[in-house]
Amino acid sequence: MSFHQKPNIVIDTIHLLVTDMERSLKFYQNILGFGLLKRNQREALLTVDGHKGLITLETSEQVLPRQPRRTGLYHFALLLPDRQALAQMLLHLLKVHYPLEGASDHLVSEALYLSDPDGNGIEIYADRPSETWEWQNGQVSMLTKALDAEDLLEESGGTGLTELPSNTLMGHIHLHVSDLQAAERFYCDGLGFRIVSRYGHQALFISTGGYHHHIGLNVWNGVGAPAPDKNSVGLKWMTLKYPDEGARLHAVEQLQQMGVGIEEREGDIWTQDPSGTQIKLMV
Image 1: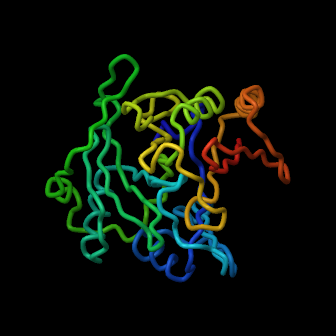
Image 2: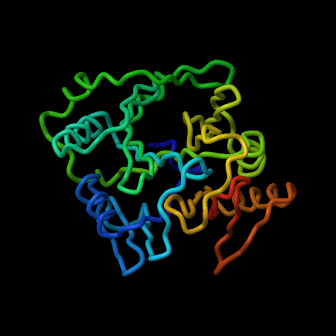
């Protein structure tokens, strides 16, 4: 969890558009185990600790179903505190018969993959100890191989996870982008991340502080893929948290020197990546 503290730059919160609030709340509360911090007719704020919001859900009559082959959210990733919690989550999902879309061993972590009722991709994972991660020439070794589910389930103690642990974090986010080089320039030269893994011309994984990745970027929906309509299901915005005001201002200056637009709204600083993803920069 130290990789998600100062002095690193981390994904703090996300804001999702959904088509049916009641259906979404049943999923996020009953299936994933979030708590509800507050809600109104249009928005609901989800929490794991009862104090801080982690995900905002928003809906309206104008929200469109998820559009295929667009930029934006590939998945957001919830980082559980340990392997036992992941085992208990897997047992819970199996008990409630919620469909899994994948279960992978990435060497640095073990992960479960599923989607919410609107098709927003979700990864739930636990990291392996960082001292076991293998690095070569500044690149971390990550693979995708089948998860040993039987071995993992032995850690569960026969108990399913019905509430997310209070120290669950937004571990990382993975985005579809239209141009990998433009995304690399924006996120690395502008926002201050560095590349820790490169998958040819298809994907980049970037982080700060030597984490295996805080952000994944890929062109799997096609080079030049268009941005989704602003009112379609998916990621409306994400929040990046900087360790201090100086670090945030440095990122703003870097972006401005690159010609990237910066906007202040009610004291918040906003920008947009080259593929149309809205980002709030905070401290």
